[in-house]
Amino acid sequence: MQTDESKSAGNDSNSDKAPKVTGIGGIFFFMDNPKETKDWYARNLGIEINDWGTAGFESRDLDNPEVVHNLQWAPFKRGSDYFSPSEKDFMINYRVQNIEALVDQLRNNGVTILDEITTYDYGKFIHIMDSEGNKIELWEPS
Image 1: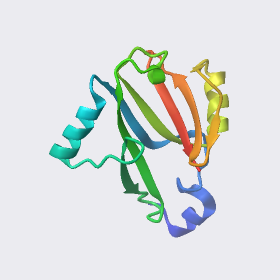
Image 2: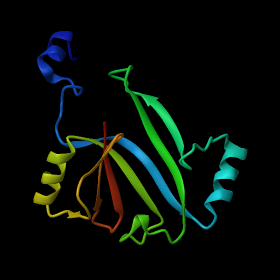
Image 3: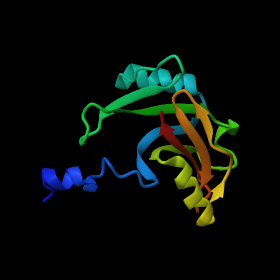
Image 4: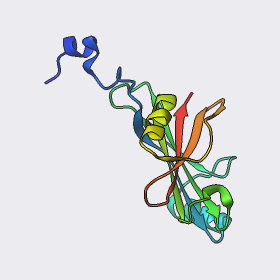
């Protein structure tokens, strides 16, 4: 059992800044008719589509309840090159911490890195390929 004293010594996962995945940031998938699909999900399951054409799902961090995480859900038009070079019908966005160190670790492990880290107001992104040919989006929130 972890005591308050061991937590303050830096042994809890909150102070751990090791390069790693911390959650799911998004689920993206191909559809033949994304607008119809979004309408179906809104009408039948109550999923609200935002101005970016995605749905956002918020959750709280159990260890830090003041921290709100956001998962984006979005159907893409089949044939979009956003998932390229993957030929799969989906892409997962993983929320990560310490993205620069993670990318260094991935390079050292021989992982295919598709682009460079790109920074936006809402975080840093990079794309990689897994061993099965799935494109993965890594996102470190701001």
